[in-house]
Length: 180
Length: 93
Image (cartoon, rainbow over all chains, first blue to last red; front, side):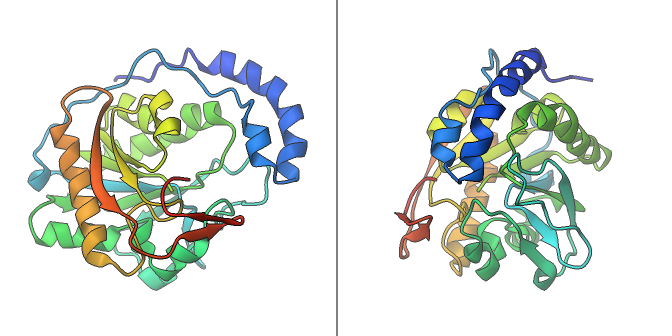
Protein backbone atom coordinates (compact mmCIF):
# COMPACT_ATOMS: atom_id res chain seq x y z
CA UNK A 1 0.00 0.00 0.00
CA UNK A 2 1.37 3.42 -0.86
CA UNK A 3 2.11 5.63 2.07
CA UNK A 4 2.66 9.28 2.61
CA UNK A 5 6.15 10.64 3.12
CA UNK A 6 6.24 11.36 6.83
CA UNK A 7 9.79 12.68 6.94
CA UNK A 8 8.55 16.24 7.59
CA UNK A 9 6.68 15.29 10.75
CA UNK A 10 9.52 15.09 13.27
CA UNK A 11 11.10 18.43 12.27
CA UNK A 12 7.63 19.99 12.21
CA UNK A 13 6.83 18.74 15.71
CA UNK A 14 10.16 20.06 16.98
CA UNK A 15 9.48 23.52 15.55
CA UNK A 16 5.87 23.36 16.73
CA UNK A 17 7.01 22.87 20.32
CA UNK A 18 9.03 26.08 19.99
CA UNK A 19 6.24 27.95 18.20
CA UNK A 20 3.32 27.07 20.46
CA UNK A 21 4.37 28.87 23.68
CA UNK A 22 4.81 32.07 21.65
CA UNK A 23 1.67 31.59 19.57
CA UNK A 24 -0.80 30.50 22.24
CA UNK A 25 -1.13 33.88 24.00
CA UNK A 26 -1.61 35.61 20.62
CA UNK A 27 -4.26 33.08 19.57
CA UNK A 28 -6.07 33.51 22.87
CA UNK A 29 -6.20 37.24 22.09
CA UNK A 30 -7.43 36.40 18.54
CA UNK A 31 -4.27 37.89 17.00
CA UNK A 32 -4.16 35.14 14.39
CA UNK A 33 -2.05 36.96 11.82
CA UNK A 34 0.66 37.61 14.37
CA UNK A 35 0.49 34.04 15.67
CA UNK A 36 0.69 32.37 12.25
CA UNK A 37 3.45 34.63 10.91
CA UNK A 38 5.87 32.25 12.59
CA UNK A 39 3.93 28.97 12.18
CA UNK A 40 6.28 26.20 11.03
CA UNK A 41 4.44 25.43 7.78
CA UNK A 42 5.74 22.04 6.59
CA UNK A 43 7.87 21.94 3.45
CA UNK A 44 7.34 19.10 1.01
CA UNK A 45 9.81 17.81 -1.55
CA UNK A 46 7.32 15.93 -3.71
CA UNK A 47 3.65 15.70 -4.64
CA UNK A 48 1.81 12.42 -4.00
CA UNK A 49 -0.11 10.98 -6.93
CA UNK A 50 -2.66 8.21 -7.38
CA UNK A 51 -3.94 7.83 -10.96
CA UNK A 52 -7.68 8.04 -11.56
CA UNK A 53 -9.00 4.59 -12.35
CA UNK A 54 -12.48 5.22 -13.75
CA UNK A 55 -14.05 7.93 -15.89
CA UNK A 56 -16.13 10.43 -13.97
CA UNK A 57 -19.42 8.96 -15.19
CA UNK A 58 -18.44 5.63 -13.62
CA UNK A 59 -16.66 7.02 -10.56
CA UNK A 60 -17.77 6.91 -6.94
CA UNK A 61 -17.23 10.41 -5.53
CA UNK A 62 -16.90 11.47 -1.89
CA UNK A 63 -16.81 15.00 -0.47
CA UNK A 64 -14.61 16.26 2.34
CA UNK A 65 -15.45 19.64 3.80
CA UNK A 66 -13.38 21.60 6.31
CA UNK A 67 -16.38 23.68 7.39
CA UNK A 68 -16.91 22.01 10.76
CA UNK A 69 -20.12 20.41 9.46
CA UNK A 70 -21.94 18.03 11.80
CA UNK A 71 -25.37 16.47 12.33
CA UNK A 72 -27.35 18.14 15.10
CA UNK A 73 -28.42 15.67 17.74
CA UNK A 74 -26.35 12.83 16.24
CA UNK A 75 -22.78 14.19 16.36
CA UNK A 76 -20.81 16.18 18.88
CA UNK A 77 -20.17 19.65 17.48
CA UNK A 78 -16.50 20.42 16.88
CA UNK A 79 -14.56 22.10 19.66
CA UNK A 80 -14.26 25.57 18.21
CA UNK A 81 -12.93 27.12 21.40
CA UNK A 82 -9.69 25.20 21.74
CA UNK A 83 -6.73 27.37 20.68
CA UNK A 84 -5.19 24.41 18.81
CA UNK A 85 -8.49 23.62 17.08
CA UNK A 86 -10.00 20.14 16.82
CA UNK A 87 -8.55 17.27 14.79
CA UNK A 88 -11.56 14.95 15.02
CA UNK A 89 -13.77 14.22 12.01
CA UNK A 90 -17.44 13.52 11.39
CA UNK A 91 -19.08 11.16 8.90
CA UNK A 92 -21.98 12.51 6.90
CA UNK A 93 -24.10 9.80 5.22
CA UNK A 94 -25.40 10.54 1.74
CA UNK A 95 -29.03 10.28 2.85
CA UNK A 96 -28.57 12.90 5.58
CA UNK A 97 -31.44 15.32 6.08
CA UNK A 98 -30.28 18.76 5.07
CA UNK A 99 -32.14 20.37 7.96
CA UNK A 100 -30.20 18.24 10.45
CA UNK A 101 -26.87 19.80 9.47
CA UNK A 102 -25.08 22.67 11.12
CA UNK A 103 -21.55 24.05 11.12
CA UNK A 104 -19.32 24.97 14.01
CA UNK A 105 -16.27 26.83 12.77
CA UNK A 106 -15.44 30.11 14.52
CA UNK A 107 -12.96 31.11 11.79
CA UNK A 108 -15.45 31.39 8.94
CA UNK A 109 -18.63 33.43 8.43
CA UNK A 110 -20.87 30.54 9.50
CA UNK A 111 -24.08 32.29 8.50
CA UNK A 112 -23.38 31.58 4.79
CA UNK A 113 -23.34 27.80 5.30
CA UNK A 114 -26.37 28.03 7.58
CA UNK A 115 -28.23 29.86 4.84
CA UNK A 116 -27.21 27.35 2.16
CA UNK A 117 -25.15 24.23 2.98
CA UNK A 118 -24.32 23.80 -0.71
CA UNK A 119 -21.88 26.71 -0.36
CA UNK A 120 -19.55 24.45 1.64
CA UNK A 121 -20.92 20.93 1.14
CA UNK A 122 -22.72 20.46 -2.21
CA UNK A 123 -24.04 16.95 -1.54
CA UNK A 124 -27.37 17.75 -3.21
CA UNK A 125 -25.68 19.09 -6.35
CA UNK A 126 -23.54 15.95 -6.42
CA UNK A 127 -26.73 13.88 -6.35
CA UNK A 128 -28.04 15.98 -9.26
CA UNK A 129 -24.85 15.22 -11.19
CA UNK A 130 -25.38 11.51 -10.53
CA UNK A 131 -28.95 11.78 -11.90
CA UNK A 132 -27.55 13.58 -14.95
CA UNK A 133 -25.00 10.73 -15.35
CA UNK A 134 -22.09 13.15 -15.07
CA UNK A 135 -20.93 11.36 -11.91
CA UNK A 136 -21.12 7.57 -11.51
CA UNK A 137 -22.33 7.33 -7.93
CA UNK A 138 -22.38 9.46 -4.80
CA UNK A 139 -20.40 7.75 -2.02
CA UNK A 140 -22.32 6.48 0.98
CA UNK A 141 -20.10 8.45 3.37
CA UNK A 142 -18.77 11.99 3.24
CA UNK A 143 -16.36 13.65 5.62
CA UNK A 144 -16.17 16.78 7.70
CA UNK A 145 -13.31 18.29 9.64
CA UNK A 146 -12.73 21.62 11.34
CA UNK A 147 -10.43 23.55 9.04
CA UNK A 148 -8.76 25.21 11.99
CA UNK A 149 -6.23 22.94 13.61
CA UNK A 150 -2.62 23.76 14.32
CA UNK A 151 -1.34 20.20 14.83
CA UNK A 152 -0.66 19.41 11.17
CA UNK A 153 1.46 16.32 11.88
CA UNK A 154 -1.27 14.76 14.02
CA UNK A 155 -3.81 15.32 11.25
CA UNK A 156 -1.47 13.78 8.68
CA UNK A 157 -0.46 10.86 10.87
CA UNK A 158 -3.80 9.91 12.40
CA UNK A 159 -6.81 11.59 10.82
CA UNK A 160 -6.03 11.45 7.11
CA UNK A 161 -5.16 7.71 7.12
CA UNK A 162 -8.38 6.95 9.02
CA UNK A 163 -10.44 8.84 6.45
CA UNK A 164 -8.52 7.28 3.56
CA UNK A 165 -9.14 3.79 5.00
CA UNK A 166 -12.89 4.44 5.13
CA UNK A 167 -12.80 5.73 1.55
CA UNK A 168 -10.88 2.66 0.43
CA UNK A 169 -13.30 0.33 2.19
CA UNK A 170 -16.08 1.94 0.17
CA UNK A 171 -14.00 1.94 -3.05
CA UNK A 172 -14.16 5.70 -3.54
CA UNK A 173 -12.68 6.66 -6.94
CA UNK A 174 -12.33 10.40 -6.37
CA UNK A 175 -12.40 12.55 -3.25
CA UNK A 176 -13.23 16.24 -3.67
CA UNK A 177 -11.70 18.25 -0.87
CA UNK A 178 -13.39 21.55 -0.21
CA UNK A 179 -11.63 23.86 2.24
CA UNK A 180 -13.43 26.95 3.36
CA UNK B 1 -5.07 16.26 4.39
CA UNK B 2 -5.31 16.03 0.60
CA UNK B 3 -1.69 14.91 0.23
CA UNK B 4 -2.16 12.17 2.77
CA UNK B 5 -5.41 10.82 1.34
CA UNK B 6 -3.83 10.74 -2.12
CA UNK B 7 -0.75 9.02 -0.75
CA UNK B 8 -2.95 6.34 0.80
CA UNK B 9 -4.36 5.52 -2.61
CA UNK B 10 -7.44 7.67 -3.18
CA UNK B 11 -7.21 10.17 -6.08
CA UNK B 12 -8.04 13.66 -4.80
CA UNK B 13 -9.03 17.03 -6.20
CA UNK B 14 -9.35 20.21 -4.16
CA UNK B 15 -10.56 23.77 -4.37
CA UNK B 16 -8.66 26.77 -3.05
CA UNK B 17 -9.54 30.40 -2.53
CA UNK B 18 -6.01 31.12 -1.31
CA UNK B 19 -3.25 30.01 -3.73
CA UNK B 20 -0.45 31.45 -1.61
CA UNK B 21 -1.42 29.01 1.14
CA UNK B 22 -2.21 26.12 -1.19
CA UNK B 23 0.87 26.12 -3.46
CA UNK B 24 3.44 25.33 -0.71
CA UNK B 25 1.39 22.29 0.34
CA UNK B 26 1.87 20.85 -3.17
CA UNK B 27 -1.55 19.25 -3.50
CA UNK B 28 -1.91 16.65 -6.27
CA UNK B 29 -4.72 18.41 -8.20
CA UNK B 30 -6.47 21.66 -7.43
CA UNK B 31 -8.64 24.44 -8.77
CA UNK B 32 -8.46 28.12 -7.86
CA UNK B 33 -11.85 29.68 -7.20
CA UNK B 34 -12.23 33.42 -6.63
CA UNK B 35 -14.78 33.28 -3.85
CA UNK B 36 -14.51 34.57 -0.28
CA UNK B 37 -13.80 32.58 2.83
CA UNK B 38 -16.72 30.43 3.94
CA UNK B 39 -18.35 30.02 0.53
CA UNK B 40 -16.03 27.96 -1.66
CA UNK B 41 -18.80 26.88 -4.08
CA UNK B 42 -20.21 30.37 -4.65
CA UNK B 43 -23.00 32.57 -3.41
CA UNK B 44 -25.76 31.12 -1.20
CA UNK B 45 -28.91 30.45 -3.19
CA UNK B 46 -27.13 30.35 -6.56
CA UNK B 47 -27.65 26.63 -7.18
CA UNK B 48 -26.89 26.74 -10.88
CA UNK B 49 -23.51 28.35 -10.33
CA UNK B 50 -22.62 26.13 -7.37
CA UNK B 51 -23.40 23.07 -9.50
CA UNK B 52 -21.15 24.41 -12.28
CA UNK B 53 -18.30 24.93 -9.83
CA UNK B 54 -18.73 21.38 -8.54
CA UNK B 55 -18.91 19.89 -12.04
CA UNK B 56 -15.94 21.93 -13.29
CA UNK B 57 -13.87 20.87 -10.28
CA UNK B 58 -14.67 17.19 -10.80
CA UNK B 59 -13.95 17.39 -14.54
CA UNK B 60 -10.72 19.27 -13.84
CA UNK B 61 -9.51 16.27 -11.84
CA UNK B 62 -9.48 14.38 -15.14
CA UNK B 63 -7.96 17.22 -17.17
CA UNK B 64 -5.00 17.46 -14.80
CA UNK B 65 -2.38 14.96 -15.94
CA UNK B 66 0.60 15.76 -13.75
CA UNK B 67 1.12 15.92 -9.99
CA UNK B 68 0.48 19.43 -8.74
CA UNK B 69 -1.69 20.37 -11.73
CA UNK B 70 -4.01 23.35 -11.28
CA UNK B 71 -6.89 24.94 -13.15
CA UNK B 72 -8.40 28.41 -12.82
CA UNK B 73 -12.17 28.46 -12.59
CA UNK B 74 -13.67 31.50 -14.33
CA UNK B 75 -16.31 32.43 -11.75
CA UNK B 76 -16.48 35.56 -9.63
CA UNK B 77 -18.41 36.51 -6.52
CA UNK B 78 -21.68 38.16 -7.56
CA UNK B 79 -23.13 39.27 -4.25
CA UNK B 80 -22.41 41.77 -1.50
CA UNK B 81 -18.97 41.28 0.08
CA UNK B 82 -18.80 38.83 2.97
CA UNK B 83 -18.14 40.61 6.23
CA UNK B 84 -15.76 38.79 8.53
CA UNK B 85 -13.82 40.19 11.49
CA UNK B 86 -14.43 43.70 10.26
CA UNK B 87 -13.23 43.06 6.69
CA UNK B 88 -15.34 43.03 3.51
CA UNK B 89 -14.22 40.04 1.40
CA UNK B 90 -15.13 39.21 -2.20
CA UNK B 91 -12.22 36.87 -2.88
CA UNK B 92 -9.77 34.83 -0.85
CA UNK B 93 -9.53 34.32 2.86
